[in-house]
Image 1 (cartoon, rainbow, N blue to C red):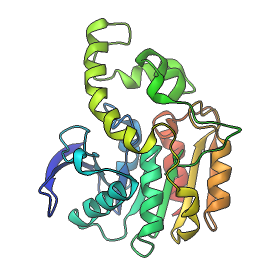
Image 2: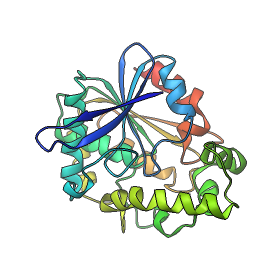
Image 3: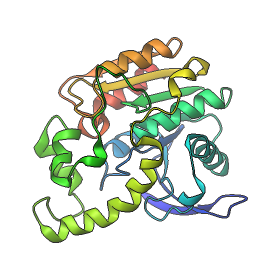
Length: 261
């Protein structure tokens, strides 16, 4: 994917945007881990769509995290980015934290988002099935938490070089993660409940929810909760897939999106 920087008004903050593919516009909002190196989901989506994938402030070369204080700030930021990119009612796809942001966007800007795909979104809290605290986990614990196939997860997460057992790789990983999780923590820590449950009824977009059946981070039962709360939403659960359902089963996710939209 190619990347470029755009400048937001009125703050002047620079935002890094990755782009690939041709066809209908698809806005992709990443999760707390950012974009994986050679992300297989983005590659699959780019085979059928023009994928536009901005990085949230605190990720990559994107700036402005100090100005995002709460969920409303983040939601309006995402809508500002969509406007700056001149995207007219794109398909909006969000994974995990990005799914939470996408759902907030659709609830706030009801007429601007007509097609919404939520991949294992964060944002709800069930007392009897708590979400795992990812901020308490060490790097070597993440592949098993995010992927059904742990070995595949390790390869995807270290595709840029290095391995989870290499002290130098881990040091670089932790330094990079500190800034990203500092941003993500504003909306996910200590629990990812920022009142989204009270706003989901406002979503008017045609909505597809996709979940990995073996999600070890946000249990698949949350998919049923989202489906119940969003009017006329459809839920697809994918077998042998964990929380990173799009990276683990990119073709299945692409198929679900193509068939629904």
